[in-house]
Length: 240
Ligand code: SF4
Image (cartoon, rainbow, N blue to C red; front, side, top):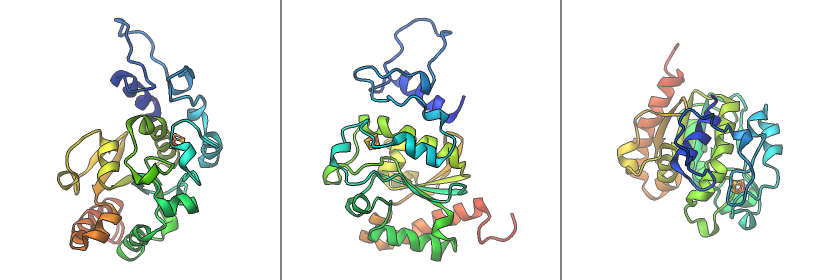
């Protein structure tokens, strides 16, 4: 089963909105895959064909002028993601902010500049050689945290994006992205700096660049986390 298929199955088991809990007592009954989820009222995951997308262009076409959750009316641009379609490293943030919504690209404001410095000056990697995306592709009003039904609607797109890119490492940026992807409520101060598994991909949580703008003393902690990522990828540390 693909990571996306496993994700959908897990959401069903949890009874997340849009994935009705299986009421039947027959555990052996075949379970639905993504493409067989029917677009019924209240079912927010109405995206048959998602698993059939073969590359990022097809995925972007599939998402289209998305109205699958209640964030759609608030956006200027749907922020899909940027970078190399074969990136070994993907950064995942929370959701587009004002600048990102206006420009249609993730991490373009001051926090984005700091992320670019981490990538280019710290890791000595070109920004276009990594991939950058968010858990949620449309800006929540007033930059509020995305809500569970919005995550349930949008995260499958991120998961398919990661399946198509096939990175070795995901760096999750900030409390919301980390806690959402890992399905935990543990403070990021306890999560950061350690490896986790996200659907078969190694995931490193660290602080969000926007947090670092307010707390520059913690840049050294992010640098520690990034050095672990570089070691894992064999970047700047000699031959693998
Ligand atoms: S946040 Fe995601 S699911 Fe919601 S409208 Fe935007 S692209 Fe669609």
